[in-house]
Figure 1 (cartoon, rainbow, N blue to C red):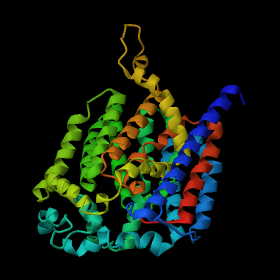
Figure 2: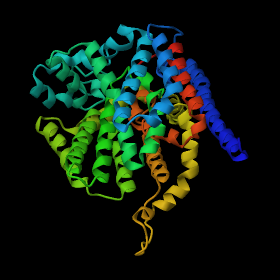
Figure 3: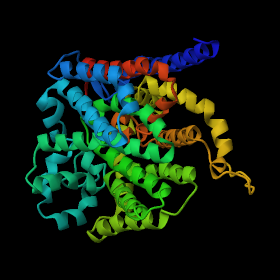
Figure 4: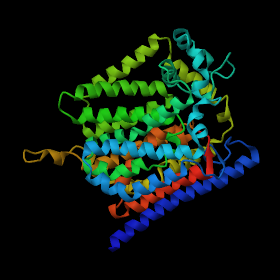
Length: 463
């Protein structure tokens, strides 16, 4: 190992240690605050979880999948044909996420998650008359409203609950089908991010990131909440936008329109996911084109028009949500703790490998941003010389995703529970792992797997 390699390795380990220290401090300080006055409203800060060491039927499978990805993942990602890599990565992510969920058992880990008093399935029958219910949707958001919605229904636009109403209407009702829907769709985000990375950077970068996307600790929450499904819809919107911005074939037209429709759906799944527009802006910035915008906007407007004509007012719903938010635990949860405690949650969902990758991102950011400025072309300038390198484009993408997450944090609208709420943003931090030295990939993959396994075996996560 050369001196430079030792320096890089030491810096990466220090960054990961700083991330682990942040989690430890958040746990100690948060526990002290919670025991003192109960204002955090979580049992095991900074996570919405309870201390419950346990094994389960998913334990052997989780250990097997983790070992397989650690040992074989980097080499398979490097040599599989691209069309084979995408389904392989999706399948491996599904196996990892499913096995983690089954550590808590089938009923507790999957089938019962979306049937608790806060969740979507508790109100399915209230949508038997769909039109009147949508027109009256905002009348039930506030806590003091008659027959008010449970927390998650009130906290989201109607596309979230309508997803599960739709499953029920086609004969796939109940918690088991809802849980499997979230698992299957949520893990597809791995393929979406790989497609976007290949389009925005290059194939080699996407291949290096693939095993880390598969083995992300975020899988603990992708498999137990609807937010994993929301993250996948947003990821596919960004993937289609990346294809529309980089392709010159006729397929860019349906890609741009599809991106718009999915962006529109994203906004009607979660109010906070309007911040995905920040990452979408990075896609257009990196590719230096606004060509897809008209069709993207047409798709967004089509979704907005459909919900508006059905009687739902997005802006009214958002303002009522803010009021409802401060009618609950958010009114007493201290911003001074959660503004940094949320970042500790991000360490846990992204993993220590991502924290080390973010160190590389921040170190490379000044150069990448400088190269992003348009260069002066001459008749002899090669076209590729006018654009940042694949590494620079990756740095910019991750940097903007990090900025979106910071904006969400500073807003104060995400005090606690960000281990699930921020999945759509944390997903775009994971590609920073492609910047890690290839010789250390298996070590960092081990760190990712250990984080997820410890969380799922030591804690009972609330989502």
